[in-house]
Length: 124
Image (cartoon, rainbow, N blue to C red):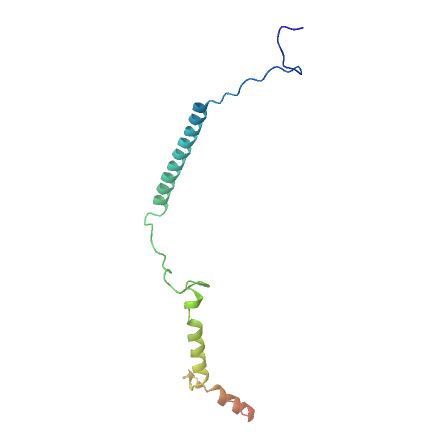
């Protein structure tokens, strides 16, 4: 037989596991330092780029504070009463007399009166 003693079954004995905690901690600490340095350099770069591209930052846009910008409502729908106000104005106009174009002699009359005239065969 050979000079080396084998465990039963013909396999050599396993070596004990050795974990070098110091090496693992050193690699982890180095990774954290690299991450922190990369993050800090990115923040500095972005601030410098922002200062170059927009030196007056932060400036409020001209449309800020308006109730509607483009087609987008800027306030909560529960707080918006423009639809109700518009409806009331339209109702008031439908129920009143007034000029559409005074120079052309064009006036508007209440809608109920106009419907009555149309039913009588007249053109208001």
